[in-house]
Image 1 (cartoon, rainbow, N blue to C red):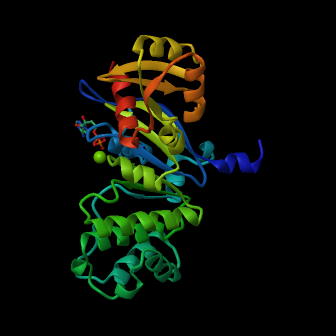
Image 2 (image 1 turned 60 degrees about the horizontal axis):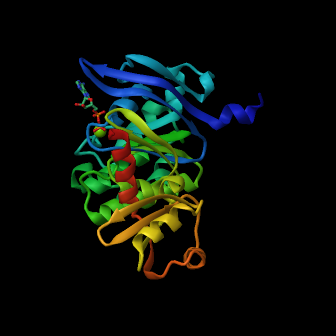
Length: 306
Ligand code: ADP
Ligand code: MG
């Protein structure tokens, strides 16, 4: 196993489980985080996102299962020195300036003071470095917390609901900063209940529902669908029969006046129209539709409830 293989695996989670009394907050999660990607943990409130982050950061004890940082090359205490995390509301000394607060952190983390301006610039707070923390908006406080977490150039930045409570401008700003940090090569893991946040910021996503992992993979694989077709014909029975004979059509549904046909591979509307015509079908309606990401997410979560 070469050095590259070792360096590529930031975190491996195996069957990680947390029970609080009779509640299983996190239920046998298994996933791995590789260098350079942006991972989202997506799920509604109470789905186990914060508990998962708490366990991998050693502030919540797992009930069973485990995790390993950097392929187990370091013990958890050593490994966490290479992790930057913000899992609580940003908390700094209110009467000290942004720069003074970061100077304190730099002393604790034993990093050179030169990092302070670099990180303040990264989160767009350099011009405000001499302003007191208490004068900052929530968005600025959150950005200062990000700068603080980045002072020691961690390999991974972990954020729990980084845009909660921010106004739309503040949200956009934090998301852009996260993207900038990722573009510089820092791996990111963020928890969010917002589908559009994960879609905008993340390359990979772990979808949680009631503590269970219902999807783990690329965001694009979740969001890419082949759409579906809405059809009607002079002879609906013949239309249904013809559709079920087309191998690219996975399933057919009746929705009011229309027949809905779902392909399992990309299917061209002209191609579909032609093959139906070849089967003697006279279409009175044919339209290609796409589900929104939100609909797909709902489908995914509903399938799991069944
Ligand atoms: P999320 O971050 O996705 O909103 P959490 O991880 O905070 O979800 O919570 C998952 C579940 O675990 C919820 O049912 C929550 O009430 C429960 N939970 C979290 N922390 C505790 C705790 N310290 N004691 C008891 N139950 C908890
Ligand atoms: Mg939470």
